[in-house]
Image (cartoon, rainbow, N blue to C red; front, top):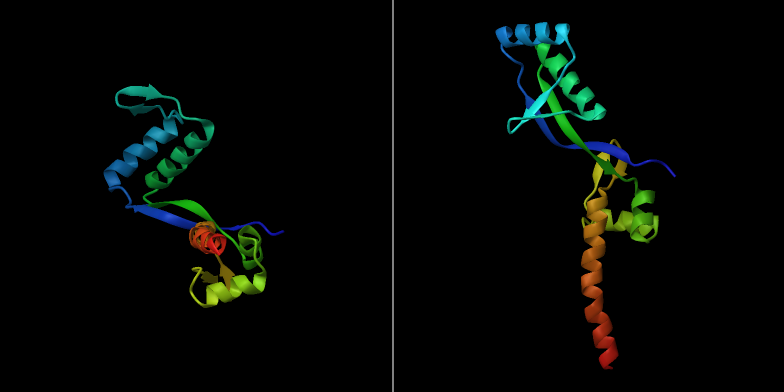
Amino acid sequence: MASPTAALSKVRTFDALDQNTTQRLARSLAESDDTTVFVNGTAMQLPAEAQHAVLEVLHRLAKGEAVSIGTPEMLLNTSQAAQMAGISNSYLRKLTDSGIIPVEYRGTHRRIRPAAIEAWLAERNESQPEASSTAEKK
């Protein structure tokens, strides 16, 4: 099965720094890669992954670049979404065509957020107990 596709959500862009700040930051980064971070006055050592991310942002800002940071969110193709929902591919396509399950297009390919499938399943499960309780009364 194919891997889910990543889409950026919650993107935030930060403007480039002024020239004076850019030059000071570039000089500091050239001298050392020490990225001691202070949170509420307490020195904190960042895990390696966070340190790499912070350094990447600082290096780009030091070059005078604006920086955008986003959180990847997975998007499923129709087969993956149908499997997650426990329904057929053709039924899933009908649900997306009718707007019941929101869909995004990447070219001609449908992409569906896992949260959209979860919401549809939750809505469907909420309406089913009513049907089963009326059947029990008969």
